[in-house]
Length: 309
Ligand code: GDP
Ligand code: MG
Image 1: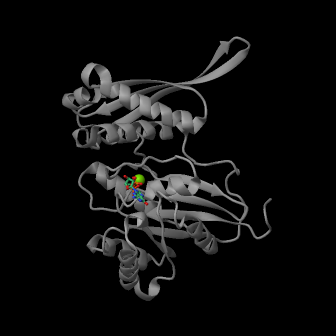
Image 2: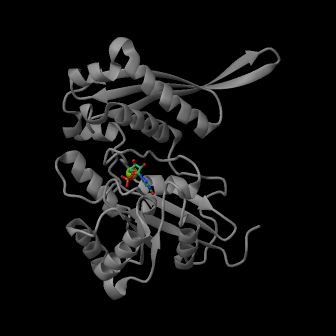
Image 3: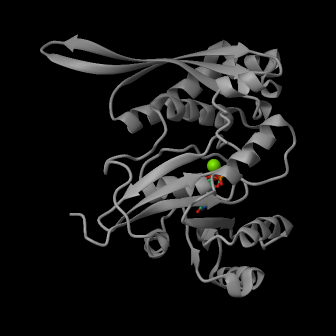
């Protein structure tokens, strides 16, 4: 049932890499639509995750963290984060409550203040802190933001603590409005992008530092194949993907002994794809070396680092 005073709007998740933005988004939506990783900067383009309830439709925008650019790719990530803020109704400023507010947080705060955005401070990973530390952190963050801070919420994107409270708080900030996307929509991203991210996630998780961010995944093809099994017709989704690295040595690492690494990556990514689309998946992976792809603008666009300004 949709009520009369229905609310809808856009909410950006903003924060430094690794504070748990993507994990929180997945928790709030209740599905795995964005990749999370112990390695910073795994979120590439901004991604919308949509939560539709009886009271509201919240369109969350996940962004890469704001940080100082290092090279072309880094600069793009920062530009993306800033463009994800324009015109939104609310910003969730996400912090890792393991850490005291620092200089980087001041940068984010100043950025918000000068632009006069509505915001909620979200202290994530509260499951990792004892009660006295949690109390202290809340006090420290309140001090940093001073009178400008109206709402602060502690959450754990892992256990889910504080998440329903956070959703209620977000609702208070949204304007009255209709559904902006059909009720069942979870994300505005094409399946291709989500599949590509699921593979990229496994590459980063399995190889850690050895294959850094110079990896891209290109989904060449997604086919729906119909299998006739006895009297039943079974649908199978066949995915063909290429993992692109910058150096030959990285290709070796990715493939592993007798192909074992690539097999593990493919198997884990495939299981997540099955969960996402709720049906069988066949996945074929290739590895290709393209030196310096990150420095080439046309390649960035080809591999999904789109310029959407
Ligand atoms: P992002 O860069 O801000 O999107 O961060 P991610 O969502 O990728 O998370 C970074 C790391 O922090 C991952 O290893 C997550 O599992 C972990 N993490 C995120 N939220 C929590 C939390 O609430 N509690 C704990 N213990 N770990 C978390
Ligand atoms: Mg992320």
